[in-house]
Image (cartoon, rainbow, N blue to C red; front, side):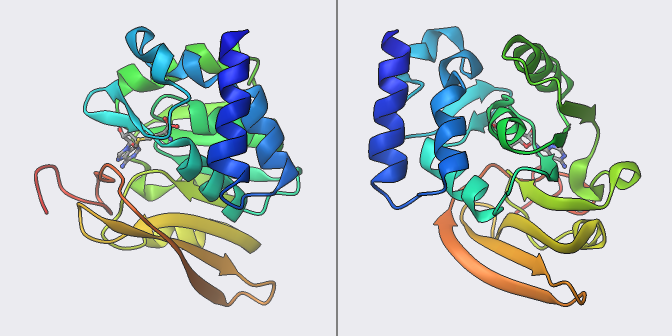
Length: 217
Ligand code: SAH
């Protein structure tokens, strides 16, 4: 019960008051029990205005970042979405409440296993998780109506653009290893690409063949 109150306060103060109005995003963030996706010892901080460690040097994003990225995908409800960087599974759970199907890729097996368990626990059976280098996307399941990358990339991996359906949106943090600019790339109905800058941000690095090399940067 106390978690539900903290969650409502999080949504009001950190999401709505900062200008995120998409009712689907608001509803999903009110529903998903974020405290289950953080380490047990950090549950009391789960609804705070910050990112938190989830083990293996990775983090669950700040609630506002999750809200901003999800809203930027402009989901109507019928989409097939690709997420790169499953991490805790929290962002995937938010997407799963809005979209029809979510494909999520994680490179660290232990994180993927934990996320799978949690997503099943909260009833997100419409999420497929794969353990591999997500800088290639998920070719067999493409094209996607929306692609969200929750780790910082040095440049846009070309596979993501190839796997974006006409009208689709890619939301990805691009920049040096310690700070990025959140970008949205839209493939127009006639196949052109439009790029917009959304927000300064700081993500853990996207490591892989089309991302950062381990220890680089
Ligand atoms: N979306 C997550 C937060 C992710 S943190 C959540 O809601 O909790 C970024 C994640 O991206 C980390 O778990 C990291 O292991 C993963 N990652 C980094 N490079 C990757 C790659 N090339 N492929 C797949 N996952 C990657």
